Image 1: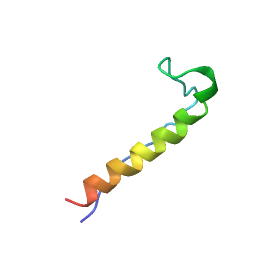
Image 2: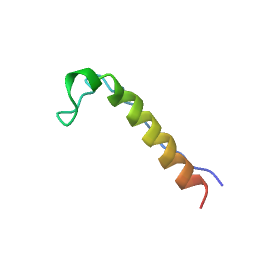
Image 3: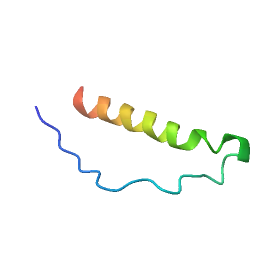
Length: 45
């Protein structure tokens, strides 16, 4: 099977009000991990 997902935009200002200042660097990393999880779930069904 084939999955095509266009992601033509960069994430430039990645932050969350839910995290304290010392954890703001984790936000983009957590986003990518969630994206990989989504890809895995989409392709494993």
